[in-house]
Image (cartoon, rainbow, N blue to C red; front, side, top):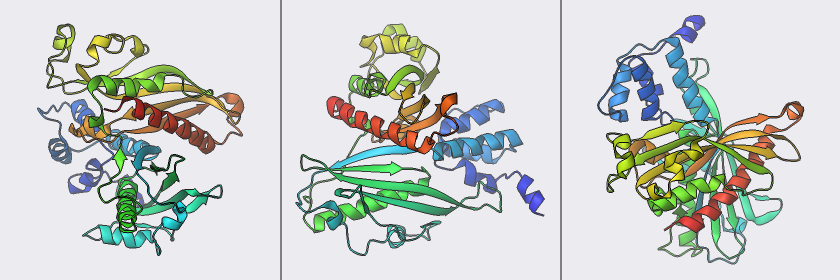
Length: 373
């Protein structure tokens, strides 16, 4: 019986659990549908999910969806938030008493949650600094995309709060394992903390988190922000090339006549190539205020004391790409890390990933302050 369950290909409502998953985009659905010879007028999830539910997927197509979901979840995604700060006491002292994540989950949902936090994690100082504190947690969730004997899966997340030297409070939400549930829990923690901080007068009532959003930039500023990640920003990380680029026409602006026909009828265009930085959409500055750049994928070379190699990083306003949401929040994640042969046996990939994330995070904040409107 177990063997039959492990080889069973779901369909209909059983398949919906997987294809409706938040980590799978409408473009992922489109790829599967088009490969089966099915073309829709609108590839919104409201259309792609019902269409896929009517189909029988072959094992390779089903595995492709599983791999797409897993690859997106298995990458750290960073989001940065800022908040004005008024308290002179250290941050650790300002955390609510009786802080309990599982209680917070129950209070923040009107339905029975499908996930829980293991143990009772608490904020702890980083390297003894009570003004730089870290909350790490592991979420256990029900996962119907695994074999029926692996329905429960675990996903990591963390939240870092740092009181900056200028008296502000910078919050960095780090999704170590970007399942939908870790995002929900992180947002619930932030909402709870903001309410507590206002009640205790650590922040003003009118203050809110400042996030890096799509609509914080004009078209040309957003381009400068994204392409700024190709500039030198760390002595041990060097830009190699752009590997992917996503653009779309701005519906409010007539595109230059040279590319009008190229973009006509296109909602989103993802370009891949060996020399994208020389593509006319990048090289011609006069286009940058007329078209929308929503993501870049970059290959870097790194040379740390612990390891050398290459990595691929995506910088993206994902909710804009999937839903044309102008409140889309910016995020980046490391798609892959490849170590040079001499370092493969002893290098700690997680430590390398942490170095890379920290360096990119610093550059992200610098570029945001420089180009936001």
